Amino acid sequence: MKKLVLVAAAFVAAVAVYVGVTLPPRPIRLSAPTDGTIPGIIHVHTNRSDGLSGPDDIAAAAAKAGLKFLVFTDHGDATRKPDPPQYRSGVLCLDGVEISTNGGHYVAIDMPASPYPLGGEARDVVEDVRRLGGFGVAAHPDSPKPQLRWTEWNAPFDGVEMVNPDTGWRLWAQEANGPASPWPARRMLLSALVDYPFRPSAVMTSLVRPSGVTEQWDAVTRRRRVVSIAGLDAHAKLAPRSADAGDSRYALPLPGYEPSFQVLSIHVKPDRPFSGDAMADARVLMRAIRSGHLYTAIDGAATPASFEFTATNEHGTVNEGDQLGVGGPVTLRVHSNAPPQFTTIVWANGSILSADHHEQDFSVEAGPEPAVYWAEIRATSVPHLERLSWVRSNPIYVRTADPWPEIPSLAAATVSVPIFTATADGWRAEHDPTSLAAVESVPMVGGAELRFRYGLAGGTPSGQVAALACDTPQGLAAYSRLTFSIRAEHPMRISVQLRAGDDQGASARDRWKRTVYVDMTAQDHTFAFDDFTPVGKTHNEKPLMEGIRSILFVVDATNTKMGDSGRIWLRRAVLER
Ligand SMILES: [Zn+2]
Ligand SMILES: [Zn+2]
Image (cartoon, rainbow, N blue to C red):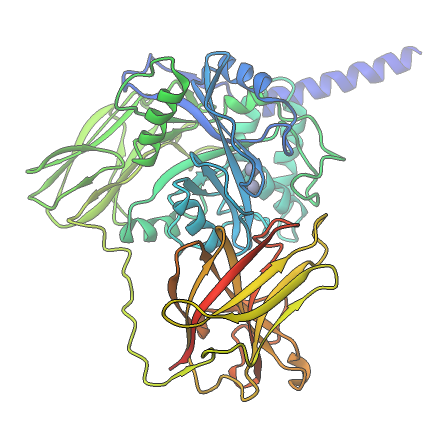
């Protein structure tokens, strides 16, 4: 018995020494902020999806951490009507959604429910969120988990998560299990586990990693405005490495919401103070977020942050997120309450313009040419966080206009062969055994239309599909694109598909697709075949045109609710080159 007590005492002493050596420091306490910003967090999961608690408990935790707003983003397809903005425990709560696409997760906020499920290709989800008036954020673009990672850098997303603590611990976990020197990462995770009960938010902060996508982000800012933001991705659960998002069976109730809320925050500068009216304040908040009037701060390193970044030239002075016309030399000013041991860096067009600043207030002169500027303050003196941006600004764009989007002009067709004339000859309906579909030609003012009627079977998605099909026995090698005019009874997204024939050997029945938004107004579309992408696994990344035997207009579970029915009208369908 005595021996046991001795062993236990030795163990406790060993743990105490270990904790004493490895425990990350508490955040540096700073003077009160003077920048007029409001701290809050986007990308929080509740128990509506894979989070641990309900909105009230989470808001109470946020209030304790000093936050003023929260944006919930439970996993979903955006068809659920979001809760209206509401104050809970004095915290303004907005309700958004995190949508899974083929190109990663997309956080959509400030929009109504979608009339159909959003999903499928990332560029299409970005387009849908934009049409619905939402603000969309490319989530965790540097996640080591391919299903989560945002990869569609050419899509016109509104914002991007440059920091996401969930990515940080996943990276450590990946390295700890990886073949290349896993021990530093294993030691890091072990320390985190042992130290967590003693200083949870400092431990979580120590796992945050510098952004892995600064280069890609930088390239986007050169083309257009994009909001740099952080997602907390708080679940209050730690799921094992192999588990899917939403799989909670083996999850630990760690880290809690409250310590998570002390790791980082976004600081938004509203154009007028909050009034206490949730609807009005949500509009003020979203206006500032959409304008990029915000910076990210790692509160776990030093708190509370105060930071201002402005640019001045002959046109005047603008704040971070803003655009300034080209006009003479530019003066960039940074004003913060950074501890003197931290380092401020000002960037211009992806290169350091000026570094090694330890002053809290300084200016940097730059030339008159167009440029994208941003500033960061690194937590240089904090162990594990030396390379991390304690504060990360939004860009200031000095230029006359966004060079993007360039809308490519469409060359006139030299070959043009209609595949629909007046009759439904050559067209047919396809459907799974439980669903219904029919096609006929109907006379209309100004010419006949093909009318396609479908009814997908209800219940859980199990291969329900309806398609309007046209056979192309000669293949499509003579053509490069399809032009068509289409409308539907209600807003929907359908998929135009090219299918290889049964005679095509290994690639028999391979399909490629491009989806299209359709509503009550007839719209003309031209789809280039080399813009099509594989449906599932195909033998070739791009469609093999000589082997294509059918063109299909497909209604399926990707963007249609099960049990949905409706009508689609095709007026014109022309193969072109
Ligand atoms: Zn996600
Ligand atoms: Zn998430």
